[in-house]
Amino acid sequence: MTTDTAAPFSPAREKTALAARDLYRFFRTGEEETLALRGVSLQVRRGETVAVVGPSGSGKSTLLACLAGLDEPAGGFVYVGGERISHRPEVQRARLRARRIGVLLQSGNLIAHLDVRENIRLAQAAAGRHRASAAPEVAELLDGVGLSGRSRALPHQLAGGELARAGLAVALANDPDVLLADEPTGELDGRTELRVLDLLKSRADAGRGVLVVTHNTEVVSFADRVLVLRDGRIEP
Ligand SMILES: Nc1ncnc2c1ncn2[C@@H]1O[C@H](COP(=O)(O)OP(=O)(O)OP(=O)(O)O)[C@@H](O)[C@H]1O
Image (cartoon, rainbow, N blue to C red; front, side, top):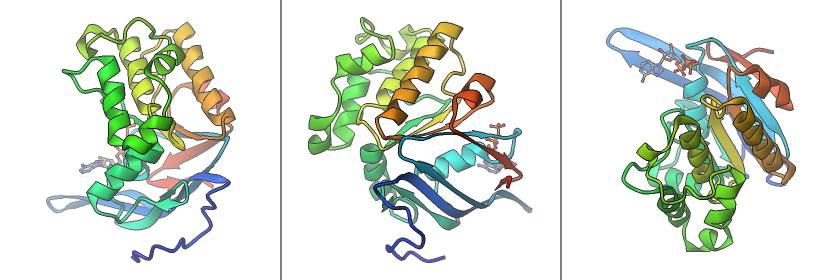
């Protein structure tokens, strides 16, 4: 493993929103070792939506966590917007993530005691003043996800679909280069699902990258490319 800052491949900033090369991730539980990722390479170009599908246990959540810099791969690299996020101290990964990546996990990304507006502002503050000043307005973000009028609601006051959309607004709070989402349409009714898919599409149309992990066939058919993960590898 090298920690060289020079790009070992060509995650050209102008074309590539996200690039991963040769990602390996092991888990050890007692005597048992699980190889969750076995050499995963992928790119998400600017303007592109990529869906990752695969059976349970194939490594999708592990991959998403490594791409987001929430987890460190044992080997390989992740670049976002041309900057390496893997193999950096946690504090640097968090800063880079706040500035460049929107992450929507199924576990949610909202702070329970803050209302929706405060959650968005917190995400913007985490990216620093410079970035926040260029970030979308709270009202614009909420309008985009169809939650105008819910800005003062606390997470526990939101229904499942509203919660998912509030999470999406937080993930988009800093106009990220790339949006990484785990089942973004998981709990949505048909109409809201279409709205979220439109929003993801408009992210890509605006030159950002979108990568979604999903089992939903609507989401799969809307993606520009589909990657199948099986036993920690992308199928050729
Ligand atoms: N913290 C952990 N400790 C031990 N093993 C783990 C850990 N996290 C994941 N694994 C193992 O790594 C493999 C990949 O898990 P992962 O959760 O990434 O799969 P997945 O495709 O997201 O599954 P699902 O669709 O069920 O969420 C599985 O065998 C899982 O048991």
